[in-house]
Amino acid sequence: MSCRTELMMMKQGLLLTLLSVVLSLSAAAGEGEDFFEKRVRPLLVERCYKCHSGAKAGGGLSLE
Image (cartoon, rainbow, N blue to C red; front, side, top):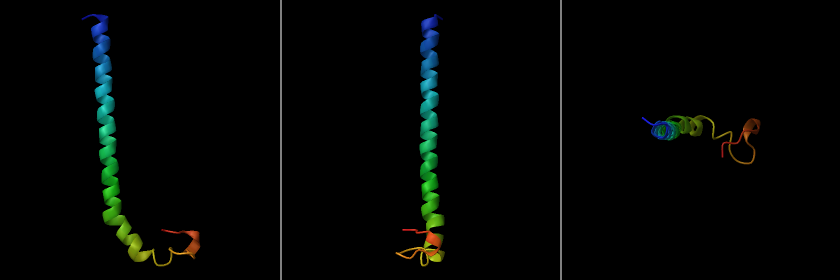
């Protein structure tokens, strides 16, 4: 193979690797958001929102 062909193949391999990493990270971010909405937010609403919302948020932590 010529140097030009090897360089082109290396660039294509790098591009495919970067693309797969980006797609994996975006999928993981979506799963994390789904986990938060289904598992964490309901607990915050049930146990924390009453005291940590509105103008007088307890301990200075507002969940709004």
